[in-house]
Length: 91
Image 1 (cartoon, rainbow, N blue to C red):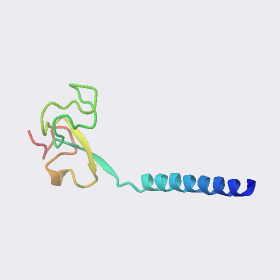
Image 2 (cartoon, rainbow, N blue to C red; image 1 turned 135 degrees about the vertical axis):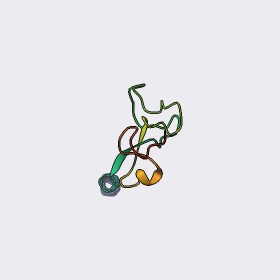
Image 3 (cartoon, rainbow, N blue to C red; image 1 turned 180 degrees about the vertical axis):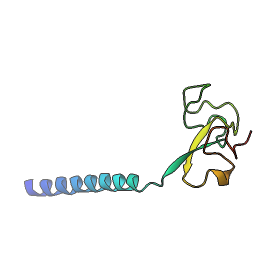
Image 4 (tube, one colour; image 1 turned 30 degrees about the horizontal axis):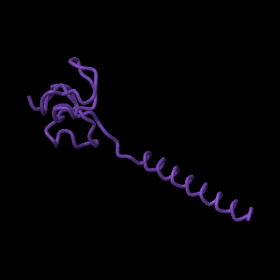
């Protein structure tokens, strides 16, 4: 009886360890991102600006001062800019 409990406990510990390792590996393989100004929708910005200090506080769509993280290389294709109010940002 004792050995079967030990075996089950070891198997469960192994499954938990494998799941944790898989999640850590997936996080390391995440695509690189960049800040993209002028593409955030109202309430969907990723961080603060000179007007507010929190994510999710944008009051209008595509404000050139607001930004979101996007996959690297996609910002300007989406009509945004890599600099606040810069070329490509919708004004």
